[in-house]
Structures are given as structure tokens and as C-alpha cells.
Image 1 (spheres, helix red, strand yellow):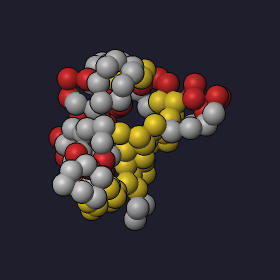
Image 2 (cartoon, rainbow, N blue to C red; image 1 turned 60 degrees about the horizontal axis):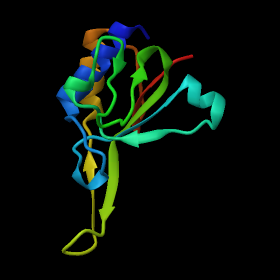
Image 3 (cartoon, helix red, strand yellow; image 1 turned 135 degrees about the vertical axis):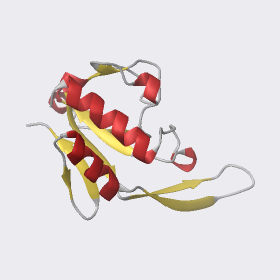
Image 4 (cartoon, helix red, strand yellow; image 1 turned 45 degrees about the vertical axis):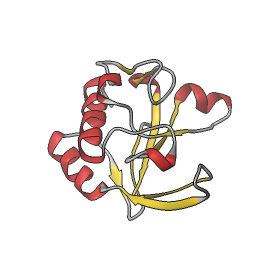
Length: 130
């Protein structure tokens, strides 16, 4: 994935699914991602809504946004967008839960039209860099 392809991926995903928030209960979009750097450490993933458009720069996701820290596109190894995500909260007036669908079929179609490599299954859309 080139920087241009990552930029196109994020701007398309934000347009189709919406910019996200940190909390599942408040966000229209949700994803998980990891970097090559993190794979060498603990092989963990971060989770949050998609970054806001202003946070998507030419070569990276900006610092202090939805994702909390900067991420170079060249370090992104894997991003997963689920077809549906579940949320719950114990905020007042009490415990609530629900789910939100993400239109990964439409997102895939628009990424295809833009020439952005990705893969879809019945459960997720993903970009995996080898």
C-alpha cells in the first residue's frame, strides 16, 4: 500500500461509514488496526472509530485525534472494519446496549473504483500488508 492508497482508503471509508469516536456507544464507525512496529512488540491491536477527515494527512494519521497518537501509513500492517459492531454502556440513565451495521459492501465497491487493494468476507473488510 502506498501513502496515496492509504489516504484514499481512509477518505473513502470516512465518507461511506462516517468519522468515528473513541467510545463504541457514540460512534458511527469502528475498526481495529496494528502496525509493523507493534507486531514486533506484543502483536496487539488498537480499536476506535475511523479518524476524522482532518486527521488524515498525506503520509500519516495525525497525533491527538480519534486514534490518540500518530500512525505513519508506511507502518500500518493491518486494518479491519467489521460488518457489524456491538456496544454497551453503563452511563446514565442506566445500562444500554446495541449494535451498528457498517456498509462494507458499498465501501468495498468504492475502494475497488478507486483502485485501493483490500479484501472482504461476510464479516469484515480488511487491508493487510505483507
